Image (tube, rainbow, N blue to C red):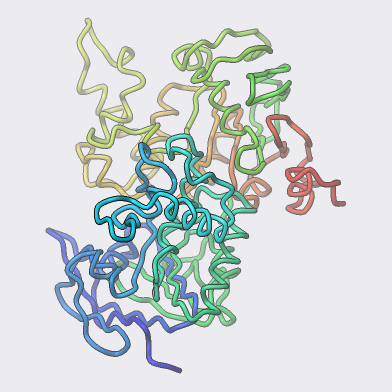
Length: 501
């Protein structure tokens, strides 16, 4: 095999009280897609930040084309051809798409230093957007874009530079199936051009679809590296978590009871059209569809975040009026939103404070908040949901993604809901935490809760749901019982094609 274009050799990194990496070696060759997988906290992000110049290792060295190199910052790494796309968006909402793509290196007019060549900027931005298959106007303000479109702008920005090593951290977390397929086409094209790609994802199906080799990290150490042809899903999971996860997607044993949530001809101008559905007590109804189909918009309307123009909502047979989230919670409906950091958690507050936040009046005594009641409530959910935290006073921002998601679930369950709406409940969490969340969802259904499960991961929807509903263009276009649902049939309905038997 050729000389690695980039090699991390015996890398160790320590933070106060934490050994993030210990003796890690990773070799990436020209023209390969190398996946890196592991649970949250395994050291993946720390390793990528060392490769891209954000952090400096305590021990070990980096080699570029076999020669030692040290990056003082990401700009130096990029100058050497190493680019990274983070899961968390870093676009500037107040600038145009074109300005974001060429941020920090706006083209100058020839012979007129300091004056931007706007014609060239719009032309070059349009070319790179076409390359990534993004139907976006370079003149458009980024704040007007969807999350998926912003992600494509991020990808376009990095690909507009002459990268030799491209690092992608969960790049498809906000992309539709078509956008993911387009991204894979781009990555395969870059691989054919000799670009080395490091691909981080919790979605093992993506790893098997795109990677040439895969390296597993656990507890800051390399467990092993395998050609993808020799790897198995069960083997990778065992390496990642140190145990078998036979119930990766959980087992749903509950039997649906009477109708708990009924939605009749719900509409919102430009977003939803005549949506009708029923979720029964003890039932998990999966809601599938492509990005922009209206799934999240439906969840927001049911929870009172956005107003509806027509239609009605019933809980346990009684028509209810929901003008805001407080109304929804009072009627027994609660939403776990898709973006836990922006929409669900107060990151600077503690685990105790976050769990108690939606039910503070219930915890008050004689008009004063009871710290003891707060602690009892939070401790109960920490134990029940197996939230891994040093203490109730740990700030949520210091928890792993999986444990942050469990805190969001604890907050929702603290309101004692009848109807639980889950929007992308396992996005960005590792396989171990995902299995625990799936088991909890199944447990809640068995206890009689009505659950509407929205997910972009079709295996999750198909395995966890009693019924699968499909949305497209703001409408419900198909319904499948569990035994009749398949990826082919759901995708056919979601894309407007004829159903596939």
